[in-house]
Length: 352
Image 1 (tube, rainbow, N blue to C red):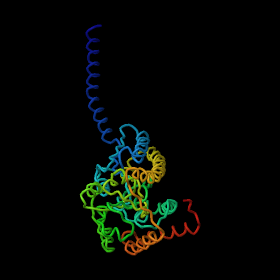
Image 2: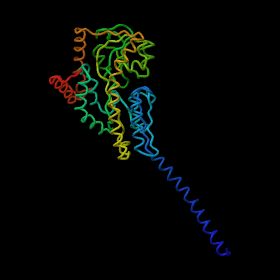
Image 3: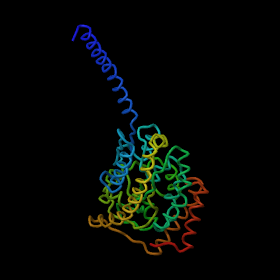
Image 4: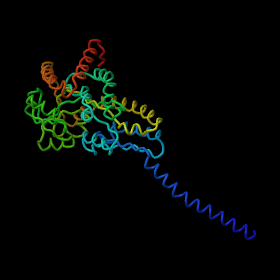
């Protein structure tokens, strides 16, 4: 090779090396930007880690992650590690979280219309009635939540609220002598209970067990699955088997996160969410009864109501309706829920 050819070859190598050196930082910056833009779902919930609810969320999240593509992550913060349900909603609003599996207690922080599914004591007598009303009210409730910036992925439920106490109690008057747990962040419920001569104590769910142990509270309205997971049956070994209200909730994602997903990921998430919701409702209803049996084996004493005492509880529940219609539950939604229950019963649709 002559000197001119050798110089030309060296020049080409230097140009190639310079080009690589210039391109590497650009590629690195582009990959960093893509990583920064990668979709990350962070979901907060009170459900216990390892529970059927948690596993259903994990499966849903994995299906979404694969559809969303490289860099996507789906992280579940279970066991209330992000605070109570009101805290989860606040964190979603400021962007620390962008999804949540919430009961109505959390959803009311977004829109109170959802209270028609849970906050109406002894309106619903079985799951068929709950399903009938939810399926028909659902589109209206979802539209109202969407207006507030939240997309409903699926509706779920977690058993019936029954009364756990540290001493035997059967009639409404028995519980008026007890300090009763009330969800923190719902002052309206506190006022309603006080007006009916109850003794509400407003605390976070994480404080229920120590509250029972220290005597801060004497009674807890709770679903059996939640009571078993929280070990409430230890200091509160008495259960009144009254179906006070169903625990109903939904998995929601912020509209901002929803809009940021790819179309393929949104469609897969819809399918995965439908399956997760069906599984959670099915397992939640089975675990409602299974949890009672598990606690009975540990010493839980269950009191069942006679028709006379049940009628007394229904009269007590009906006294609450004028106080919650138009305040806790928007009047049109309240009226529609009652109409749908009446329609269901008149048609004789109940299966169980």
